[in-house]
Every structure is written in C-alpha cells, then in structure tokens.
Length: 181
Image (tube, rainbow, N blue to C red):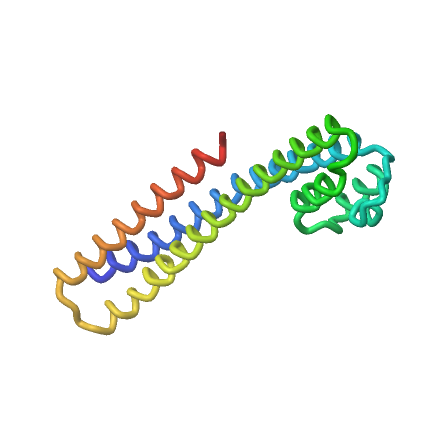
C-alpha cells in the first residue's frame, strides 16, 4: 500500500503541474492578443488625434498622435484607458464628433483592459490553489511513510485530493473556455 500512495501523490503533483503549464501557454497567447487589441485601439486613437495639439495640459505632455504612439510602444503609459479618457475630457470643447469617436475608442480600451485583468486574477487564484495542492500532495508522502496511519485515513486523504484535482480541472475548463473565445 505504501508504494501505491507514493505513486498516487507524486503523480497527482506532476499531472497538476503539467496542466497548469499547459494553461499558462494558452493564457499567454490570450494576453498577447489583448495587448495587440489595445495597440490597435491606440493606433486608431493616435490617428484620430493627429497633430491637433490643444491647450490641454495632458495633451501638451503627450504631443501629437505619433508621439502618443511612440510613448505607448515604449510603455511609458501605465493605465492607457484613463489617459485616453483624460484627453477626451480635456477636449470637450473641440469638435464633438471627434471627441465622441475618441471616447468610443477609450471605452473599447477600458473593456479590453478589464477583460485582461479578470483573466489575470483568475489565473492568480488557480495558481495559488494548484500550488497548495501540489505542495500538499508532496507533503503527505513523508507523513504517510513515517507515521503509521490507518487505511481509512489514507483513503480519505486520497479522496480529498481527487476532489481538489476535479475542482481545479473544472476551474481550468472554465478559464480556458472563456479565454479561447
């Protein structure tokens, strides 16, 4: 029985680590897609702005649309959507159609940033739970080996870890199904 326990708990940790690694591959591609979407919206925002420099303080710091894109691509901006909204608010007295178009682009960037942050938070939670299950399953091996435990206790531990693994697999399924859309 002892060897079976060693195989079970070590295999559980390996399988879970492999699943998490596979999930990270898909999530990294999805995060890259989010970044590409934001970059496309930023290009549209910059082209809409053009070289129309107004007296607004934020806009003077940004400069023309091309300078805006240069700063975006060099990652000088942390929260790009709030900067876009600030520029839109400061340009309220300008051409209304232009401001509406800029606000629409800024809203689209906000949506993409929120989706990206939700995905990152889900992955953080999944990683934390998986890490504890992996460490827990590997920690049980010495406990079972050096402490004489009953057969029922050992089976209960195995059942708990199987349920945890099923919970994690369900979570992985939901994360992947939403992120691959």
